[in-house]
Image (cartoon, rainbow, N blue to C red; front, side):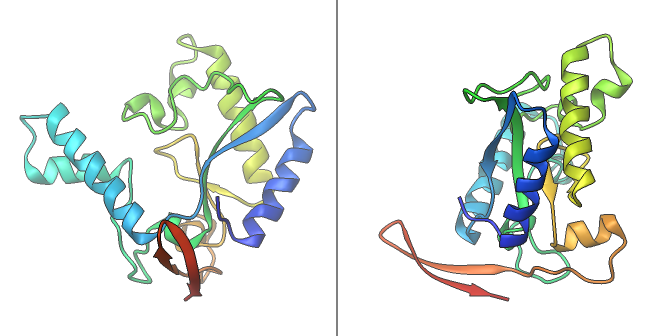
Length: 188
């Protein structure tokens, strides 16, 4: 998994805030453009299959709740293309994820970060675990994408918008991949 150095350093601070019996489980960091494009297409196809009565616009809008459109445009860059986005959860020291009420990448209204704030009787453990993750991550400077309890940004355009910063610290990272191996990084 690749991340910007600043993101890695912030995650080290998060670990210091967590109770000693917990760890971080990292799911996703930097994604090459091709991976972002394939993931977007996969989610789009799944959204079409699960919602056959939706219009093309409704399918696109619903898909965009769960995965960013693959773009290098500076004002609309996909967050994971910068190395400044991280998908993660909290787990035990043995690597068992805590209960967050949904699985990672679940296409559901329950994936919204504050879902259990409005439905606390459904799952109090998920509510408390989401609060712990959110509070630890935001305390060190990450910004949460409210549609996904597991997604946090630091230094990219989404982070800058949510934090009221005038500009992002991180632009796109382009890679050359040969034989399924990263050959070269180019930072924008």
